[in-house]
Length: 240
Length: 42
Length: 221
Image (cartoon, one colour):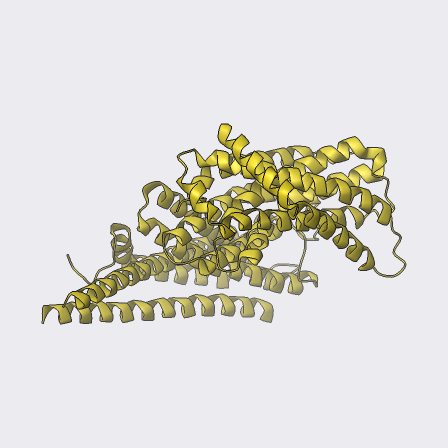
């Protein structure tokens, strides 16, 4: 067995996927950049609206990330195979990054477009709640004692968190966030000719997520292999 | 206009920085694992 | 089922003997109400219908967290958690037993706080007592359903007391919003917002079922 490859089948697959995914990402990102740059300026917002092309896809990636975190946790609970816990941890990390990007670009756009950084739009609030959930998940992992217990706790919380996503939507609706903000965030309302750049930007962002996730999963697998070898070599020293 | 530029800059910079950190971690781990394997063989 | 009754009985008996959780929850909730009243700007009318319902539920949430934190802490101190975990029973029933005891204590605190709150904030809760108690109960079920699950987790992490609110609060919105809005509606004109009770019921159901199934992994030793 090659001792320099990641620990598990899942992670070896991820390692093999990194290069091809990266190449596709470069191509798609270049295309998206081109299309976004060429997209016409909006009548009202000028070039500012183009923030949408990164803001919304980041949210997609954030939700995908949390779903994967929950799925990884569930698979870990079911199979008791640590590779799934490592997948959950990796997805939580990458997903948190994309969620943060969404939370940061939103107020920048809002401040520029409507003068105030925050509006109580359901989608914004639910994504903000997702961000806080990501944080709580990360804190739970870091405050748990290392080992299977931390993995189990994280898995339980991830499952609970993902169940809350649809509930949060209904709750914010009830809260009265029915698009009180002046502009409609639906892309269709922002004028013609932006469907192309939007889809390109979405593809690029999702590919970035996949690529970073694959890389992060590989690193997690390598780390696990390194840890295991460290434990083994310590054991051998004791025997010697 | 500068708002949009700022956003794209933040997004690209963050993604690139994170990717860089992961790539560095990966090469460091690979090196360490290779060293261990070579040590075991010798 | 026997497990549920056994766990419930044990908890309530322990509580009756030591009498530490219930008074603490009640007093803490009352103090929270007082502080909240004084945290309002000078001259705010006591019966400010906009702020009052939310403040009541803040007090409820704090009392719930306090109670549930203590609920598992006692077991941890006496290493009884391992005993529970080793018992050859479906751990879901242990969860339900604990959640039920938490619920009863919380309900007690809710009742006394409601009375106190009605006086301090000058609102007429008595007029809508029946529907309000229903809302409060549904809310308490949700709080204890989710809280007991997370308390089981939190009690074995490094920052025990902080961990429970940390885990619970991000997932509390679909509970808080309907509860507060329903309370506000009841106080305003005796009405309930559309969909509030349904959302509450769904939330309670989701957490009860999920926690029943997942507690297996929380108590695993």
